[in-house]
Amino acid sequence: MEKLEQYQQFIQQLLSRYTEYQPSSGDTEIQAVFDTVRNHYQIMHVGWQGTRWVHSCSVHVDIKGGKIWIQWNGTEDDLAQELVELGVPKKDIVIGFHTPYMRQFTDYAVG
Image (cartoon, rainbow, N blue to C red; front, side, top):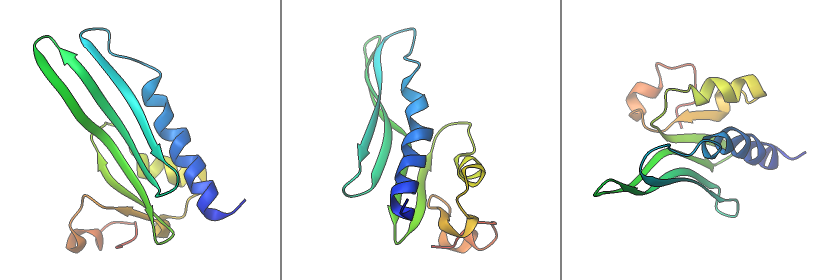
């Protein structure tokens, strides 16, 4: 399997689990948004919590330049470590929400 296809599969596998459990209160929906053409992957929360409109992104992952960019992770899960456990080399993972300066101090790619 080509590296890009494998990374797409890994990301979709990891993020799909977030849609398995819908909130028990309110009228919100957890949506997986997978753009496999442009390689953008998001988990969105959309709907109503009482009288408050909810529209937020809890996870955003892109594939750019052959690397997996974790652009945002609003969960308690360590997505980068989970990707490593699936076989993605650390040199192919970028923690995008860290400043470029801080990325050099991680075990992951700078960009």
